[in-house]
Amino acid sequence: MIGLALVFTMSVAARAGEGIESPPSATGEPVTGIKAPLNAPATAVSANTHYGLFDWLDHRSAYGQGPFPEPFLVDDSDGETNEARLDWIHTGGPGTQHTDLIHGEVEKGFGPVTLELETAFETDSLDGQTMSGMDNIDLGARCPFYQYVSRDGMIDSTFGVAFELGIPVHTQTSHNFEVVPKIFNDLKIGENFTIQTVLGYSTLVGDGGDDGGLQSFEYGFVFGYSIEHKVLPIPGVQQLIPVFELNGSTDMNKDNPGHNSLTGDIGFRANLDAIGQVQPRLGVVFIFPIDEGSQEDQNWGVDTSLVFEY
Image (tube, rainbow, N blue to C red; front, side, top):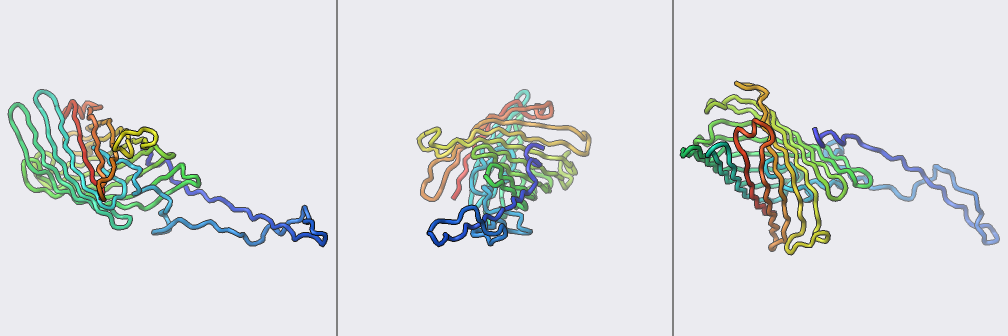
């Protein structure tokens, strides 16, 4: 998978000791060509930047420091401290089908661990018939377990694990529990380019509707490129991040195992000037189907997202 296994090696550089010149001769001139033994004590020792379980985390990593844009359709994987979010997703499907989704989310960080609470209100319309209601209440947690940062900082890769539990509220759109263990990788290449990868295995637990018992492999990729204000001086915008996403799932059982649905979106996330202690982050993407499975549900869509970091 893109970005997931790009970097998983630790490099160890050997430090060679330098010799120390001999004191000057009786004439006051230095004695050249004579060095102290190579095993003389080093005068400087590089600081250890590793911490955590097995020293697998690295203080130099940019994880949780803001370079990774908040995804739109793909699950978030970056570390957060205090964040609230509100999205409106509108999609149009075949014929008269269209869906509106109002999605809210709150995230809170405790050290390397980020906890998440989210839900949504969904309205589906087709041929004059409307179905609406609250979606599952989702509880989530994620934590990095291994980080690699190259000596020059060019490669910065974080691997982590996550878990999501969806609790049904027994409306027209919420029938089954959902259990989703995940792994993720957040990769930064250079100063500007990022790739976020999230892989999960979803299981719907319950007998609600036709989807009860469905298992599916979920995958998502988020590509971002940060443009700083000094490069593109848009008033009120600290950072502009063009974003491209791929979000998909493959059914693993039930009536149609192997059925795949892959959706893409393209747009931007703008990190705006702070208002007091709050920094707003506005984003808009255009959503489009990529394969036939995705075209069954939608032909196009727009996601407008507003994030508040405080």
